[in-house]
Length: 288
Image (cartoon, rainbow, N blue to C red; front, side, top):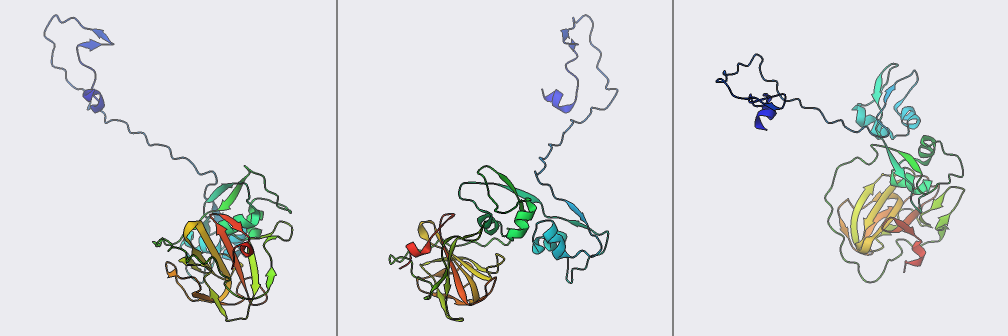
């Protein structure tokens, strides 16, 4: 078999698979042609279901307009094309569009929760999937999701510390502006919105580790996500300033931000969520 692998013929004692009777000394075979190297066939790569597209810039196009038209973020468009400020475009210019992915709808999924998960504006998400109100989803339905939105630096995070044993506390004190549950057609509040004085402290509901601190999801302004033990995550949105950093361990009651009205709100408030795994729960049932 070694000879076969090297490109030589079979043994000269066989011709067309039939043994040759040895009558006279066999002459030393002379190679007329050099052995051919083995043929290496490239393995075909599977093509993504939603392959990356090439965009041709039209007159009047801007990065913002293109990102909305193709259902991707401005940041993703800039990153994939390595554009530099002031991001000027010219007609006929060729740009790459971030690759598309897909999501198979599971029980409990909503347009709102998926837009949060994939960090894309609801309008872009529904337009990308040609959806109409009331945005009803069915289990097993396959949806397009913009690629490139989850890219970022990988930061090694410590495990969350043990909980205090005192339960989850209210992050701020104030009246509830919006309760947990369905709202307008197709919308769902995955948490509660609490009115509070601008600049007042937002406190960690339980001990945990900060997994995000910044502007990550459109509409929520300055956002903090804290992971707790036993699979819990809490979210604090619309802050005027953030007092912690990603990877920092915090204690129950520690000030992590100041109340503000960043994002899509018209008055100072805190949007607060509690999740057990990926499932949003009503915080009022757990806060003490």
